[in-house]
Amino acid sequence: MKSRKKRPRPKPPRKVRPKPRPARSEVKPNPSLPPPAPPAGPLIRTFTPQPPPPGLTTGIRSPGNRPPQPTASVLRPMGEVLPAVRVAAAGRKREVSALVLAAGMGKRMQSRDSKLVHPLAGRPMVRHVVDAARAADVARTVVVIGNQADEVRRAVGDSDKRIGFAYQQDQKGTGHAVLCAERQLAGQQGDLLILNGDLPALRPETLRGFVEFHRQSRAPLSILTTVVPDPRGYGRVIRNYGGDVSRIVEESDATPEERATQEINCGIYCVDAANLWKPLRRARADNTQGEIYLTDLVEILKHDGQKIAAWRHPYPTEVLGVNDRRELAAAARVLHRRKAETLMRDGVTILDPETTYIDVDVRIGQDTAIEPGVMLLGETVIGREVRIGTGCRIEGSVVGDGTTILPYCIIAAARIGRACRVGPFAHLRPESHLDDEARVGNFVETKKTRLGRGSKANHHAYLGDTEIGRNVNVGAGTITCNFDGVAKHRTIIEDEVFIGSDTQLVAPVRLCKGAFIGAGSTITRDVPSNALAVSRAPQVVKEDWVKRFGPAARNHRDGGTRKD
Ligand code: UD1
Ligand code: CA
Image 1 (cartoon, protein in one colour):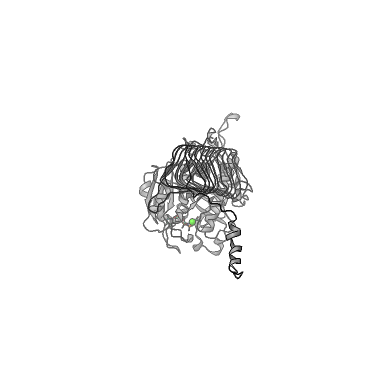
Image 2 (tube, helix red, strand yellow):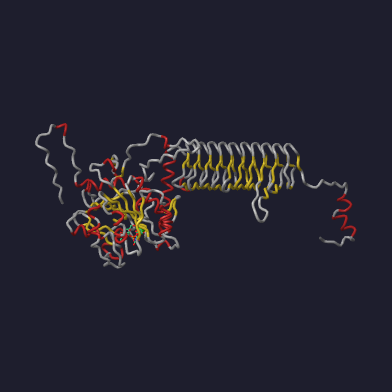
């Protein structure tokens, strides 16, 4: 092992000592040391929240309003925390690109769909990886697609010009997948991050740290490894007596002795682009799976006398590939847990993070409290000082400051203003829009409906395709009959209308400002401003009718023989 230290320069004055080069032992993991146990608390200490996109109106005072942190810490093997170095600011200015392998099917998932498009925490699996690379400031990302190419391409999204695609016709292995991207990456100088597409929990901070490690190692190839108690299914990292990585062996090609190795290959590589294509073309499919393995690059470079650097990641949960549904659930849990940690750190109360599922793209303002068993999905935006009751599921919606959502509400693609009260048991379907201070109570369903400021529908109602003005009272049991069997029609309810209970509004119909609808009415024609409309039959009262004609009287008349 070369551990020769640089001799001090002839006579530098003591205080201007040359910057020490990283000692070999710093960049080489020490195989004799076990990795630290995962932390009990947050796995992630260095997550930097994303600033919200401009133009959102919920008034969230989000952490994004803080000045951006210029650096983040990166986790080093053995759990040390180093000050971060931004990739672009590293010693040698080299470009970093990323190659994401996403052409495989993922058979162990037992699914009709490619493994890479399975959603978790609000994004398709492969997009987590592409987004992590992008957030780590890579100059360009190429995604290798093949199986269900269109779906995977769509899952990645093709609006970003810095993302390109390469096509792998037949899935002949990870090494072959990389070679399929040669044309797209030809001429690319600097470093290339190669990432399996099934690593949804991978963080940009880790990628940055890994690239930095790779540069310091001066090896043409660095691999990211981790140690797990049960390494089944993963490629094992084989080291020689000196502790250097000598090769990676897939489980099906491994000897029993090799299989016992608990250090696994994570499918995260950083390679000097100049040292990739030619050596990789030498990889042969002479293994049990008959595939061209990317992992063979280790042995090939080793054979050429090159050094392979390995960065041992201390927390396996971040870097374990997802192959089946069990691992999918485990990765989703990591993402939800991480999101909850970030939100709590930024001033959101989450009573029970274990049962709260908040997708990665959800944003929540300070002093909002979330009760157990809540799901906040998609790009939902929740304001400040909101309370969300247990059992709510809110997807792709906006909730304004100071609003209370009582337990068990289902809300999708809705906009709810400030200081509203919703639920319990309300169902706000797409295009429901509540202005400030509106109220929707239990067993109320709305769809394509706007409820004006201060208006209320407190109990048992269906409001569909309806425009409701300000300070309207919608009585219990009000139903808009918006569908005539062929088409949907609109109901317009102007400001200050009062609708008595158990009313049917047969659309199209308009209730003009200040109109008053008597309870139990079926309204089929427009009601003018300030008018009363009532359509029920007049009440009939017959004195002593029960005594004369009631059941007892009838039974007596039939000679007392009736039983029913
Ligand atoms: C791979 C590694 C293994 C490592 C594990 C980590 C190889 C040979 N083995 O195994 O050492 O421990 O990842 O999770 O690399 N893909 C393609 N085209 C192909 C084959 C695969 O694009 O022809 C893509 C897949 O879509 C996937 C990634 O490459 O995103 C990894 O493939 P997968 O089949 O999951 O590899 P593993 O067998 O898990
Ligand atoms: Ca895998």
